[in-house]
Image 1 (cartoon, rainbow, N blue to C red):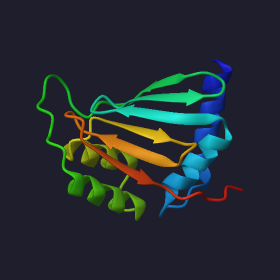
Image 2: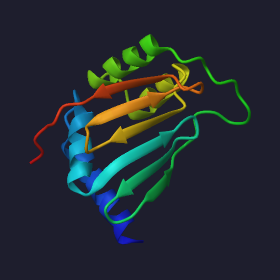
Image 3: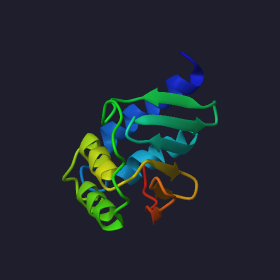
Length: 138
C-alpha cells in the first residue's frame, strides 16, 4: 500500500474509535483533516469515494445502493435535511444515511475539510450546503 492509503486508513480507524454517537461526523472529519485529508467526494448511488490528501488522492469503492439502471429520485431538500438531523442525532448508521440521501435525490456530495462544509448535489444541479462545527480531537 501507499503512504496515502496507509495514512487515510489509520486516520479513519482513529476517527471511528473516538467519535461520539451523537455528533460523530465533525469528530471524524477533524481527525481526517489533521491527517492531511482536504476533501472527500462521494458519488451516489455507487458509493464511490475520493479522498484528496496531502499524500495523494485515494479512491474507495463501497457497496452500491442500487444495481442496474434506475431512475434518479428528485432532489428533496427537506428529506435530505431530515436524514442529516437523524444522522446527527446518532439515530442512523452511515449506510442508512447514504440510502436516505439517495432517496432524497442526492447524487454526490463534497466534504470540504478545510472550510468545514458539506455540499449535497442533485442530478439537475440542485444543492444544499451545510457547515459543521470545529471540534477538539484528543
